[in-house]
Image (cartoon, each protein chain N blue to C red):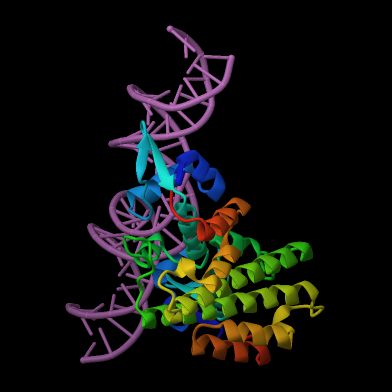
Length: 146
Length: 146
DNA sequence: GCTTGACCTCAAGTTGACTTGAAGTTGCAT
DNA sequence: ATGCAACTTCAAGTCAACTTGAGGTCAAGC
């Protein structure tokens, strides 16, 4: 039997039943039968949920995730889009790594203020979104108050 | 002069003025003076905003970000917490990398269905949150329908 | 045959992070 | 001195992603 009950799917996937119903409502997954009132899902849905969870943790919205698959649950993104998304993910991964380095550094650095630590400054500068911010940062370090 | 107008801060940081006011309302940043009615911020706020943006992109809530600093805007997390957070970030970074690899692979793989591609299976399995899901995945591949 | 618990529907509530709108004020350039 | 863009407050609105609640149905074990 390839059909599984919503409760089983919920347990196996770690996704609440209310969430599964919600996902179905928005068309992200679908149940393929009913046993009485009860939804029955195809076993593959479990795999699909793994992909959804992965996509979510990568910062995609449910809508974006939905748009990555066609109605047969096959990925259907054009190649350029795929590479773009991959690049984006890589950038994001690097941002995370920067922050993690920063945190580890803060945990160890003995400098009285982190802004006085060259390494911290460097990490922070790398994290600045605008040139203006990087600039302020550069001057914030040398120039003192007033 | 170390004071900057909200508009200037907004432009330099790329954060909308309404958002700056909102951040101030929830105590995440503070203005230190007024010019008439207008808020004036310390230049350092720009650095702080860079940190906030970094924290956000790392998936922290504004509340969590706020709790990382004491009232003088110095980081004030206990070391073990810092390392924990760093570990968490590293894990997340790896998840992102997995997904990006997956997307790149999908862009290139010639297999008719991705589930038939060993490499894809492996990546997907790595992404599964539960053992049950990994298990289904393993069998989904060998066993066919019905 | 009756209870129980897991499901059902549908509407409404929640949370986080903002944005928008209305109505008023102010600094600065002309 | 006047116009106006950029600010101000405060309340309300929005969006995604769920969760909760009320009231109902069903199937299986005792």
